[in-house]
Length: 254
Image (cartoon, rainbow, N blue to C red):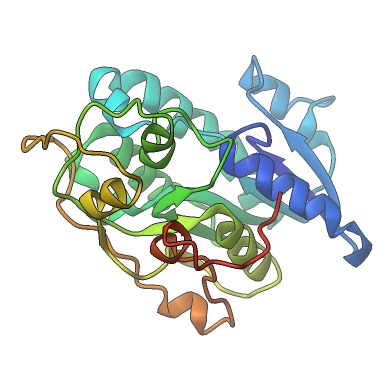
């Protein structure tokens, strides 16, 4: 099976790409594509799509919610317009497509980032899965704007009263590996299935921060419904609270 991973140099994409390459003995031939300068290069006679792919895992996107409020056009151009050639290719060639959506698509009207994810769900081809990622975390190499890293590096300026569903990037990878050969189509949540107060995360990491009450465009609580994935045999394995308590002995993917 020939697989293309877009955004393979990004936080999630790098983990997925590297883990899939380790699975090449199972018949996977994996290629990566990160931030092409010209979207036309993807679809021309000598471009990436001149090849045939059996599955595309589309993870290339801008993902900073708060930045989208300041620059909505940038997010629309990158997340929606640059996804269209990929979606069209998959539709025309019946290629399996797994693409990064977001928990924000549940309440898509709240901010420009969530709107781009909902639009992609609407325009997605039939043989596809919109993966609604919740709050993805990892011990290292995450994005600088992610709360876990900000707490690690003591760069967070405040904390909120929000509750969030934290899912480890290793569990994201195993969910994607479950979805590749499955017949599931549509969109589904990928999280741990538990809403945790972000104040508890900060406290567990020894950070005492001022509370910010007003956070426009952000829901108070997010919790994944992982029942569709568990029906496929997938379960999350790394709980952030247990990890912070030092109780997690799981061997993490690198």
